[in-house]
Image (spheres, helix red, strand yellow):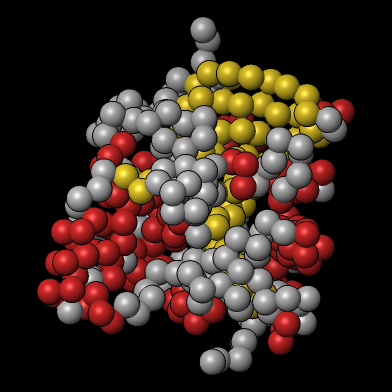
Length: 330
């Protein structure tokens, strides 16, 4: 079968019409990491009746225990479908072992470091090749953390990123108890008893996560921990990021508190940046939670249009009109 890309082997595994939307599903085999068995499935959404006319590309990165259905339900709902109907060229990657992406040989050792260093650059190259444009990126939870790592580690740079949006993204949350070595070691030994964390059993989502992801997070938050890998300090690198950035927190988010998202906002070097806190005190209809901030009826009415407007400002090069938000500190 002829590859759909000149970069690396890519197979178009399905091309369907889903109501008013077109859905093309690609399987990428970039072979750019130590584990050459890695395959990444990426879904492309557009308008079925305007399949030859593509808008500005937007890449949506799902979080842990999740897959493309976070953005795009079987019934054609979700932020991904909303943006496609708004004229954007929407791309939905599924990370290693999630959704349609099969588990790689070293799945049990997967880390955010691998997503940032190998997978996101491969996705960026493919989307740029297919669209002919620089994509916007939006990540939720672990997807946003992976995006931050890729930017801070300079695995993605300005030629790859038109703008970056981080929803529910915490990096330097203060787990002070984990700074105490005996507690950190105990947590490490407890996690090592498991090979994977079940999303359904933990009631976190439909997918499982390798325990290596949790161990990596423990290392970031433990004694002398820092958001980095063995080669690069991602946290320090974020101060050099200059792409337009949107950071969104949810007042009712117990997993990623507002102040933790604010720390990411403060660390970013971008001059064109915006902070939004989704809560009643800031004019929204409710105090959104970690998932509700993007998947809920109220998000459909309040948050999705915010994302669309942010992207439209970027595509019309009017980002100079965006003011840096200074939310109330708590």
